[in-house]
Amino acid sequence: MTTQSLIPRHHPAVRERHQQRQMAKVGMGAAMVTLVCTGLVGGRTLKQVHLVAGMALLGFTFWHWQLNQPVPRLTSRHTPEEMDDDRKPQ
Image 1 (cartoon, rainbow, N blue to C red):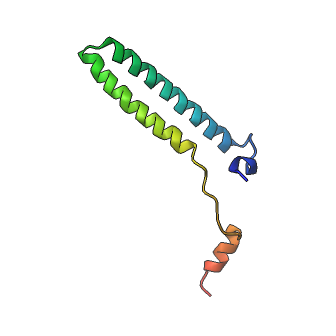
Image 2 (cartoon, rainbow, N blue to C red):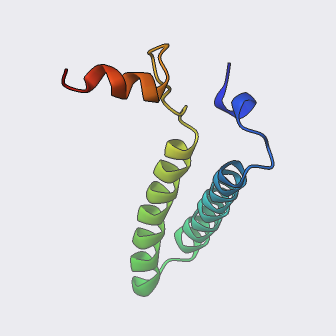
Image 3 (tube, one colour):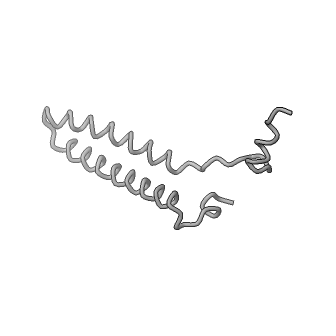
């Protein structure tokens, strides 16, 4: 069972995660276009822009990868309240 099947699609957390994925994709695309353009043209200033665009691409790629990792779930079959009761001193 996936997390998305447990949380309705209209839930704000699901929408926010979807928007973050879209922003990461747009950032990756913009960085890639900048890399290609500055790589083809050349010039001293554009070499610096090329370097920054490469680092931005790495950052957006990591962000995108991180957003697509599965959300960890509790491995215990107890509810959080039951887990709290077990940990209380007796």
